[in-house]
Image 1 (cartoon, rainbow, N blue to C red):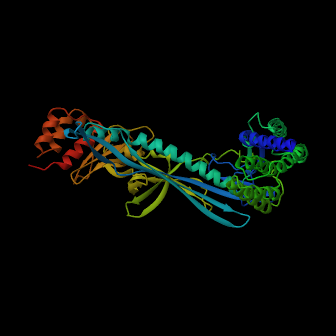
Image 2 (cartoon, rainbow, N blue to C red):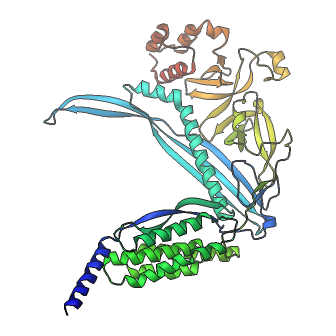
Length: 524
């Protein structure tokens, strides 16, 4: 009787020792396989694509210049600048009793930058085509400034550099999203990483610690040999003893105590994970149910069921039973481009073009051509498949206005430029040497005065009611700057005093400020 009692006590102490030391740690291992697409092109000889940008590739496909099974067109539509809002921020300084001792104000510039892009896909296999739109916006808030004018000046001086920053960020996001969509839908992405893990006993006091560690080393060594493009039959044989070990361990740990269930959970979890990467989803589901029934972490059981069901569906759609095969990705599009052809890797900006006949057309203009808008503008032309094939040149004299979706605006202004730029003007205009039609960027417009910039260098002032503008680089403005501004400010004594005190210089920032103050001035 005494021996039986001692045996029961020893067994109980052993069980308690095991339960108290059943700590498990994550131990990482390597995997390598091919992610299967949701809409595969099963005939590998037809896995070709043509696209208008070099920034997107599809693994498992051959890129061709034209006529790919997947004909893809990606367009970035530019970044739009919203209306700037200078906000007044109140600051109160209080004493310990909460009494306001002083009040001060600071100012911040607030503006929204928004971008959009479109991915168009035409699939020749099923004769289906579709578009995916992408959009992103960011509400920018500047630092705090002591005056309204300082906040406004900061924004005016940095609006374009800020736009370029967010444009770059948004373009990167859109391209990543478009590439991810194409890969998930059609591509064969190779997955190789060391982020997966097994649950392995971590306490040295646990009687199964050494065997758990040994089992993990065997698994780690086996999975290190896994290659996405090689069969895994030999790997299955190599890890079978470990699967047997975890299965044989389970009957030794019966009961409802949480730490006992944890040991069983580790075995079920590890076996389910092994079978998942051995491409045996039905067995994954078997052990997923055991995890749920064990009631240690049911969520993991549900997760294994979910990924096993997806793998079963992927195998069915792709007509395969393995994620391990050769993936061929190549570029066959390296043919010499015609000089007149538009680059297949272009960034376009959309704009509404209003002609002198008041016809309005939505056009695309390459970013590299925007800075060249002056006497003419080049718009991108597309074929019936939406592929860019060339450009169309439109003379400034036939254009009334050009409004970009990002907020920039150009207008046809007649004025005499200060100097003729080589190669930028028609022979007829050189002979005339007078005021001619030119597309100028709008800097400021009001009922009293307008300010434009030509070729990103030459400022042009056009008073309300005038048919011709005046270049501030002309000798009349350079040597008579104060005189000209004083005349424009006629009736605005305070503004004329600022001109007399040389508060304005012949630059874009000061002239924009002058135009705003003139517009707000009440004529005496």
